[in-house]
Length: 281
Ligand code: AMP
Image (tube, rainbow, N blue to C red; front, side, top):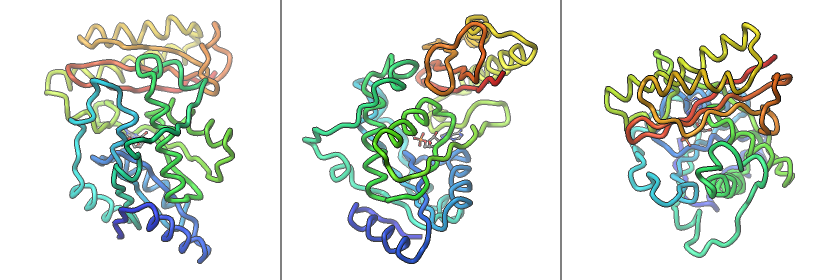
């Protein structure tokens, strides 16, 4: 497994593979890899001949006062996990090359990035879209894999790829959970045992909302309430619980008449956690 640290070398490697007729897959990550990330690697290996995992803590997607400095960095463990998972190369770029100090060109998606996490984090998706495009231009992937845990991110990236005619196929992977239902996240390590236990209320809330939806409840506000009550009863602070159309992220109609995304952001202690489920009539 190669460790590639410059954009020029990454491009050279990908072009070399592609000249030999090999399809290149990319799994963008911020490192601190867990089984959720590795499930993306598995999907990527099934869809491409060579798999690149990028590890880059993207400073432009963190807002002022967010956890950029505290974000866990575990490169040695990540390297071993990638090698064991059959990754062909890690792209581990230098922050100064990825985002020059005077960077003044941005990719701004102006619709799907506004609600949900975009409301409290107004520059987050600008940072995500810009750096994901830069990663695409470095790794030149034929296919790239993203997790549905960040459902809004997948929607924004798909829109960017469509609008800018980026020649890459986007694959979305199911959410991988801990045995008690908590969605795996690099930020779960911020949780002490008590809030860690309380955070399972997110999945409980989503599961009961899904069950009520399955039983015929089609009122988005009532489904949102189900999730909110579960989280607040456990002592969590809800940033949002929002039911939106799965495709355009506009507010879901009442009654819900097309696939919907029921999305949550909630805080338990220092950790802001996100999760979601899809509701298909
Ligand atoms: P991150 O390192 O948190 O930026 O995540 C990198 C990629 O892994 C993103 O596409 C995430 O959506 C995906 N991912 C993170 N956690 C999970 C999970 N529990 N299940 C599935 N995908 C995940």
